[in-house]
Amino acid sequence: MIIISQFLLIVVFLFLCYVVFSIPGLFILKKLRLFQSDLLSKNLVATGLGVCVFVLIVYVLAMLGVRNLIWIYVSVSFCGVIYAIFNNFRGIIDAILRAKSKSIVFWLVLVVGVVGQVAVNYPSGMNYAGGIYFWSSHGHDGVWHIALMDEFQKLIWPFRNPELAGANLVNYHFFSDLLMSEMSRLFWFSNLDVYFRLMPVFNSLMLGISAYLLVKKWSGTETGGIWGMFFGYFAGSFGYLVTLPRNGNIVGESIFWVSQTQSVLGNPPHAMAFFILTIYLLVLWEWFKDSSWKIGLVLLILGGALIEFKVYGGLLVLGGLAVAAVGQIINSRKFHTLFLFIITLGFAMGIYLPNSANSQGFLVWQPWWFIRTMVVAPDRLNLLDWELKRQTYIAESNWKRVVWLEGMAFLIFLFGMLGMRLIGFWSLVKLLTSKIFSNYYSQFIVSVVIASFFIPVFFLQKGVAWNAIQFNQYFLLLFGL
Image (cartoon, rainbow, N blue to C red):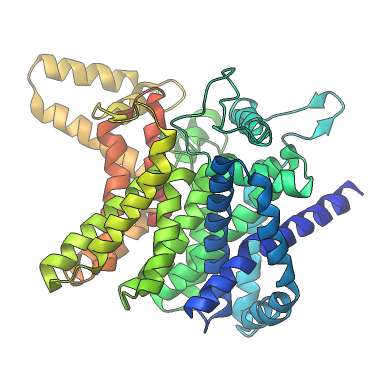
């Protein structure tokens, strides 16, 4: 009975997500005449766009003190739902089924991928005989997000920090919490259900389908799209190569510091930023074929809002745009991407700066910190003798040995976190050698991949030092694709 009720709850929530996010997004795309030929791509982009538009409207209404006006937006969305269901949703299913044999593989990867990802969070926040349990990091992080959602539902502006009485919420990317809070407030869901069960299903679906469509377009084959979705869901680190001989078990996901995509749903800001970034890349593909203001508008909304979903993802998008803009100017004397970068930067800063305080220079130069702690920490590689050798060689000025040790540690860090994604180097080499100076899309991808890997190699974050490792999670996402 509990399973049936939970299933029905998920179905109702996904339907409401379609109404609140997809319907407005479909209306915008229809008016812009974008993505009209592919129903699945149209609905995916519309949903990602709708997520950003919805939370931006809630944010503006909150600032104006009239947040309940969001009901007008929701009511208008409901008016178009019947038309959209019969003219879009049915077409999506038909399009997938027309893929014949490959549709079975698509559904298999999608369903198993979603179930596997959601299962990590699903048991937390439920009533058991001993009370409400929270597993793993949910004992802190999950409780923090739930408290933040509760705080948002008080309709107080400026938003308050739930941990500090009377203190404003600053220096935190809160769009995912605001979105989840509003879905709970509008439709009377439990915050615990939305955070641990309902939103994770939505986020996982969006991540899998966006990975499928992006790699399908990128590779030109449906098989490529399915492999993209497979690696998005299932690729992990080589941590088990350490724990299996050491402890006899297959664990060790984050032995090389980086949490894998499989567990990203435990961090809702990251999960939403992942699928927004992937949808952004899908739209960006079209931008470099047709730099129209219509496509630019969609990119502006997605890229500008991304920074308040997850600041790391927003910074990487802005950096990638800057690199592609410079490449376009040098190679073809065109300024379309530079203009897109400038307005996206302005929009992102307009969202981010009002909620920041003394956040300048949040990165601290500390090269090799993650690599060195990976080597010596007891809960990671625990190779203390390796560190003692390194210090001895430095004292002896035996720099050849120092370079060898540091180089090996670097390679263990890199390939350990990548796992089977290491085959992505083949694609990376092709990107670097296939007319990259005139391929601005490749410039964007490569620059984001490089930045997302090397920032944690050389920098830590002020406050919680190891938070900088979250840049590496974008590296894993893109390398998997």
